[in-house]
Image (cartoon, rainbow, N blue to C red; front, side, top):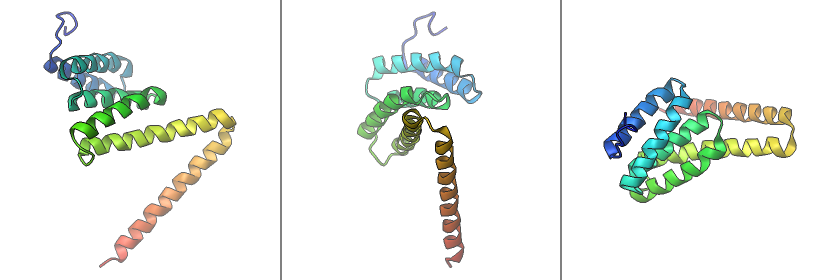
Length: 150
């Protein structure tokens, strides 16, 4: 309907984003993607470099990340983060969330490049398992320290 009537105002973008989120959380990525893209286009045209535009970029990037499309997610996250830092500041919760997502995507891109360069999937799986063990040990140490504190 939004397309049929050529609705290009910010409220239409919000509706598209909300519908995209609804579909995304249900795993209907192919249906969510064009809605996120259309919402982003509207926000870019109507708002320019605005926090809502950053949110639209982030929505699309997270959708790509869920599908393992890290190379497509990375530039969207970088742009979303730049807008968020400029408009909201580095300490804003939205900016912090985008930083975390960018770190996740960068991590997976690094792992994928290791697979491509070495071709040794077994070694990579062992590396990931070791990293998980190390994280679990760190969490156990934190819990023990917290329990010892008065």
